[in-house]
Length: 94
Image (cartoon, rainbow, N blue to C red; front, side):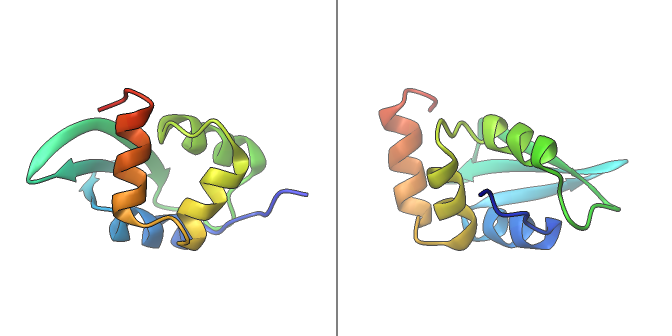
């Protein structure tokens, strides 16, 4: 069964992996590598607490994950920033 993550869990993981916040109506997280903006981003509402399965699926897709396990490893941190960058390069996203 899939875990329900809090927005704060996802925000924490994004910050650890090199995403930067851009505030507006919602918070946009954009990945930077060596100070260069990458085409990888996601958006989380300011008011979000527990994120529904649908919203988690959308975030998972925006972060370019094909499997729920990889997404969970990203959030729970067995996947490091370097691991994530290697994954994105291997899959041809960056």
